[in-house]
Image 1 (spheres, rainbow, N blue to C red):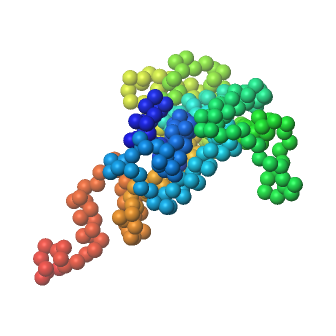
Image 2: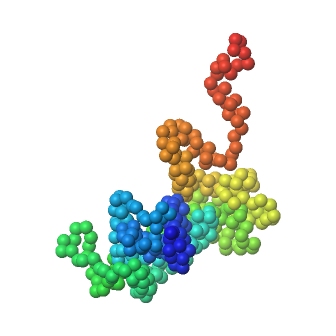
Image 3: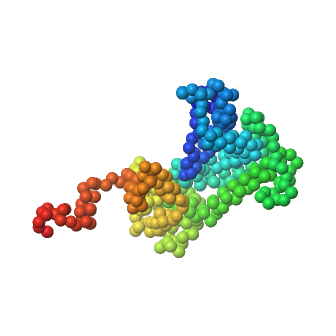
Length: 365
């Protein structure tokens, strides 16, 4: 009997999804599904330890026969899930990180410009949550108590230690106040500071480079002078690299007009395609800015992409693969869309390794 069969009305999922470190949205999805299946998981862990209490949970072969190592792991997982500290930490973390779910979704879809437009709103929402923590945390703590009651866990506060070596004693008068001061407030403060640091005003100049992508600049039908001036002031951060900084504003206006007249055509939507479509003679400043955009290290998405491919290429059956072969397969998998002719590969091999076997005649050079 599966989880979905045992609890048909409590969950729409029958198993926990795998957590991918490079997919940000899936982390939020895993939090939601794990919260939805929390009670079910505790029940099944208890069934592994005490199968006689759950006679309806049997396998196709009959009764459950678990190894000792499996029971040991199940006991450890059950003790962790039935800890009030674990439940409080999980619920608080899920609610706090829910504020950045919208940005993660946009970045996962490569909607970088839309994600940047949402940054200020998200930071304001986090700041508002911090200011109204007294009111907001009360609803979070009610959710903690509800989940704890479902799995049969009593409200608990860690004891205060006389010698504060591994942790500090958080001053509090109630369990709710303890978890608010020990978990919620530090987590929100950390998230807020990291968001402000990651999307500070120093990174606003890089954000304005997105304005040069034709698919983004054409989102506004009538680009006013104020918007062009604002974009110019930000882009003049690279004034020393521009050939004609004084004409940047006129180039931005002509660049918008150029792509506004080609809305029916295939408009570039990335920096590399925009650079290839930019005439250096007509738009020297924009061409230089696009060149800077293509070489500016913004994210680590490419490195994370290679890590994901490595897990696919080097499996347990390919554990003895040499480094050179693994590197070559990684390059082929990364550029899978670029098909290579077999004839060209054979020709390159024969030219690199000149042997008599590859000659028209074995007896004549």
